[in-house]
Image (cartoon, rainbow, N blue to C red; front, top):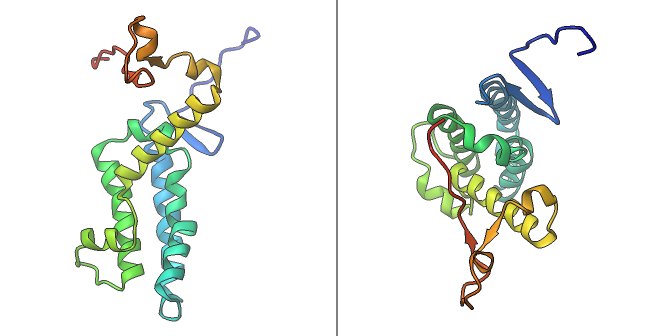
Length: 172
């Protein structure tokens, strides 16, 4: 740029997300996990004086919120190993909220405290993101890529507002 070579770097930070050269977001998620466990460790000190509703609120605000920001961007790029690490953080939060021991299962408790697991939470985030785009028609460059069934042909359909999935190839 300007007759000078552009330096290559392994990762860059943009809008709070750490992008790596492979677009796997492993460093970003690793940083979020470290922050989340540090905040959870601080919460354990005062857990005995808090009721369950306050423990849920604090875990949502101080621990799990780190994974909600940008999940629409990095969610599809996560490997199974990294996604499992995020789920471990949520499992630790469930154990803190419900007063469970380290080896106790948390699956049944997720429903009791009305939390979605992190995979379903990311899916909900995608759905909310798409709904906002469809309702507001902004940003237009994303809205213009959405194909509705009513645009596919002129036949009057009952499900004219359904979205037609785009044709894609799974190979890179």
